[in-house]
Length: 398
Ligand SMILES: *Cc1c(COP(=O)(O)O)cnc(C)c1O
Image (tube, rainbow, N blue to C red):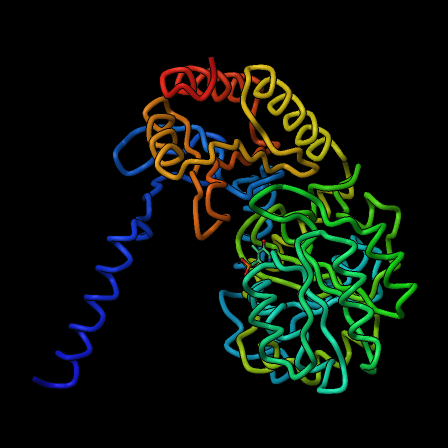
């Protein structure tokens, strides 16, 4: 038996274990652009309630035009990292635009927010320092923290008392950095930044927020949770993605204090050793922020849609988590029920995803609905109707 035959046996049994624990992920194939209504490979047209297309920009004609124009004017790819020959004026313009959007001093682009988080801790913090991280932070933050040598502290999700205990434990370290997601993607809850800020001041700590699910969404003008709490420009670091509200293609960023961004440009490994974003993506990114400077209509519509949907669903008797984002968690508690319900909703033309352990805690299975400015009221009504119909069949509601 050669080495690969043995390894293959091993992989097959790993895969079998994933399948038998019902955690094997199958991917549904979409054959249309990302939008409120999408076509899947079975030919079925469904309403999409599980994209991060919060502002409906994924198929926006002006973004597509900007990308096409950049393809013509600046070519397809950069074939270089930023510091060798991968920086165009477009990259600098997008960085300035992002910093301005969040009220920060400077910004640095990455291929993704996963990379931004992977490259933010290690260059800034050493064994002398402390990272104090929310237990439900995104996987990329967890991995990024693992790559740095700072002492790690963890506090229970959005739990201010626990954060205070951890900050007390971290008092002997040189620098302290509190790290939190802006919006937690499974519940849709917002990090309690007012309280975090108060404790950061009291215990002499800096703050980093990952605004991936909150940028473009939270706050009256979608500037994220620093807008919601009136703390724009008051924290040290924000990371985020171009892969959600801002057109949904790809790209990530870190924005913050000037010296922080400067040092990241010198030392951040995913920036130094990974290719520059393609000009078309960058140009469309600039356009996305430009559109949001011109009008607040998309954010307003998203907020209106979220309120409309959550109120109607609650009135219908569903148990939903309080949300301050565009994520609405419909609680079912039972894993099998969440899968059955999602399947039946798809038959009704509603595409949503059911989540269960280990993605959410045991006994906390749910369907996550993501609202978008791309949804019209008729779409929302169709979704609500389907939830009520299926909910009654499955005895979730009366
Ligand atoms: C989606 C997400 C990311 C990853 O962003 P990409 O640009 O897709 O890599 C990172 N952090 C949080 C909190 C996210 O929700």
